[in-house]
Length: 262
Image 1 (cartoon, rainbow, N blue to C red):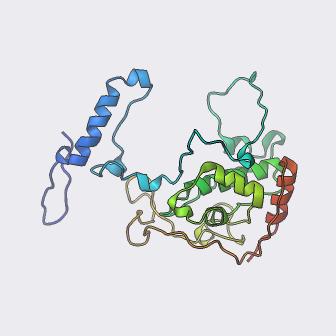
Image 2 (cartoon, rainbow, N blue to C red):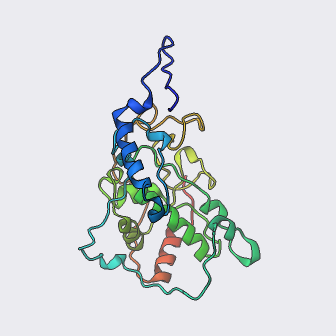
């Protein structure tokens, strides 16, 4: 029996969670899955953040739009890469610890370890692309170009409505075609600090776990309202560069991001 949920109003006690229809619906799915958890290799549990919430309430946080597998990828989204499949795969790998400047490797730990906050905007597809591109740029230049590439530029210039989700390959197609300006987090927070070209304009929000572990309001509450997509920012002096090929793309991106802007 789960503990009763206290309302805190005049000492009244709410119904136990097991009587909540949304909890019951989730519990049914969990129990059905866990009957054969050995087959799946993992067990389901309730997520504290969505206790008592309707099925599908998580959807607003999922901004990546899945591609129709029956449709071919755009030509500029296809990358030819070679992999050495004879190397042993490690049991664990931390890219922040690996690219930390030791043993002749570039020091990109501050860029890799910068966890960005997308506010209450479904632009995870752009945040993932901008963050990964920032990491790759630092590593490829041996740490000489250690800059945060702008999530704002990618989310609101690669799409007319970036807060309503986007395709994963849209990020890389846009970066390859246009490059990105630099841009940090809200109020110049985060490891790279401020002084970059186009910082993210939306407020910090609380995202995971019980409220109280950070000073930010939860999504959908006062201080972190649901966001709509602004227009593509035009005040960064950004130029349009067209590049193809790995080195040309790297050179183009580096040229556009090497200088800070106020």
